[in-house]
Structure formats: structure tokens, C-alpha cells
Image (cartoon, rainbow, N blue to C red; front, side, top):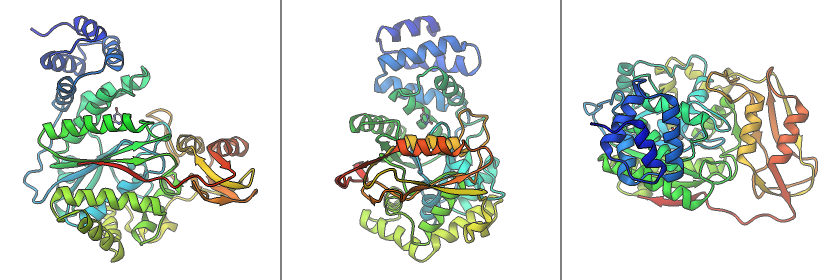
Length: 437
Ligand code: URA
């Protein structure tokens, strides 16, 4: 007989560990609508303060995973590997990584999310490509992973429905930032994809969920532990998110920057993180013998254009205009642009990623609520990154303004608050902080 929700909330509130069968019954009852939101909210808050041990976290993940369909891709030849990022500003890595990994022989079944709050989402970026569809049926998803090598879609109603319901509740009850709840949420969705392995990009810093290295380490260990306990190969990289990754922040602008990367250009930090994460996928898939060989293979796919060709193939297969990745003029373009000048001379000491993400949101690039619509064309280009020298009046960033954008003085004030200018350059910081394999 499962214990009633009141008893489970009471036990967790007092710091006890719960039995896996009780956790499974709680998730099951909540998903079926038998346990009310007020009890599940209280439960989440108890977990937020008391935490969960490894056994409880795995039980929660499994219960959420089993709340819906679990894909079986075992009939598709080759290793199926995905990447998950805990989210950052300007993080368009998936857009280049999926085609690069596929071009190197990895199968990439990628189920992505939309942007919420200050961080962007892969689905919104892809949808800025005219015609691109992220709502393909699972049979088509399966066929494209097999034939094209990669497919990027959104979460379906039948995939981890418990997470969908629980995440909405956590979002409005201030219970998102809990390592066991985040771990179960992320891993239930990823494990439902039918993957053999997963590369985790756990972001650390001012623009990330995890602000400190010890917190990021704990989240990475929790995520990887769940994956390995379920028989998956998992590697985690802890990467810096102290400033936006690359320069473009905003949906179509980020597609343009991805194309630049796949043509061999683009910002150095974006390229380094993309190559490193894609190389880890090749290694997990067993298509490269070691990391140096994997990096060389990824660099090769950029150099000879196979990554860009694969992106065009993915776009065509998913209903989008493949010419848009060759000619960015075909992507949505904001009607107006303006530059925000530096208020003082010196060196850029910090660019607050969260503040830049919120500025992009105020321009219309993101959403405050799930039902909000994004403007694909708006956003901003970072012109001065951390360490760059700057003269007074030189532009810090270029703003792409649309019909729904916040007025210029308010956006300018946001930019001035986000950039910190100092008398000397800060010490260069590492991008990949740690590797947990
Ligand atoms: N991303 C998720 O999918 N779930 C969380 O809880 C946090 C980030």
C-alpha cells in the first residue's frame, strides 16, 4: 500500500529518505491528476530544502521517465548520442554540433526545448529558419535520425508528461533550483529519447543556473550518475557562462553566427566549446579513438564544409528553406538597428550574461511566459567581449530592434548595467573548466 501524499510531504519536510515505491506512486498519482497541485507544490518545496539522496533521485527520474513513452531506436545502426546544455545566453552550440556530429558518423536524436526567461531555446532558433518544423511525428523523427543522421524536434505530449506538469508547477512555486529536481527533470526527458550516450554541458557562472563550480560539479555528478545507473555512456563538461557565448543573442542572429562557424569563422569561444562538445560525442559513439582524433575530425568537417552541408540537409528534411543557411539574407531581419556606445574608456571586465539575456527578451527575442510569442529577427550582437579594450563612445553592442521592442533608452540602460568597464584587462579565464568522464 503506498503511503498517502500527506505522509510523504511530512517525512520529506523532516528530512527522511523516501522509498522508491512511494516516490513512484506520488509521481503516478500527480500525473493522473489524482494528487492535487497544492500537495505536489509542498512536496517540491520540501525537496528543495531537504534534498534527495542518490536512490531517491533515481527513483524520481525513473518514475517521470515511465510516465510516458520511451523511444526504442535500437533498430537504427550506429551509436545514438545527444548533448544537453543546462542553458546559457547566446548558447547556439546545438545548431552546429548536431550537423557536425552527424557528418562525422554519430546518430543524433535531439529533443530540445524553447527559451524561457533569460536563456534562449534551440527550437526558437531553428524556427527562425523559414518553414522549419520542430513538431514532427515520432515516426518521421526516427526516419530522419536513420537517413539524415540528426533530427531536432520539441518535446511531445507523450514524452515524460510528468516532467511537463511538474516543471510548470516548479516554475511558479520557486522550486526550480534544486539539484535532485533539475536532475530528474532533465534526465527523464533525455532517457526517453532512446539514446546510448549523452554529453552534458553544465554551465557555470553569472549567466547560468549554477553560479559556482561546486554547485555545477554536484549537478553534473547527479546527472551523470543517473545516466550511468540506467546503462548510458555519459561525459560532462563544466563550461564557463560568465558572458554570452559567441556574439549573437537572438534567434535568427544566432543562426547566422552558426553558419559563420560552419564556414570556418565565427567567435573563438563559440567555436572552442562547440568543437569540444562535439568531439566528446564522437568519443562516446566510438567513431574516434581519442579526444585529439575526435577534435581533428570535427575541425575537418568544418574545414571541408560537410558540417554546413549537413545543416542544409537537416533544414530541408524538416521542411525549412535550405538556401537560408547559405544566404542569411533569407532569414528574418529586424527593421531597425542601432549601436550602444561605451560610457567610458578602459577594458571590458565583465558582461553580465543574465542581463544581456533579459535585454534580448525585452527586445522580443524571448518569452516571460510559455505562451508568449518570440520575434525571430530581434536581438543583439556583442561587439566588445570580456578583455577587449574600448574607447569612450565606441559601440559595445548592436541592437536589432523590432515592433515590440522596449524603447531605446530602457534598452541602453540595460546594456550599460550589463557591461562593466575597468582600468585594466582581467586575467584570461578558461572556457572548459572541468571534464567528468
Ligand atoms: N531544464 C530542465 O529541463 N529542467 C529543469 O528542471 C531545469 C532545466
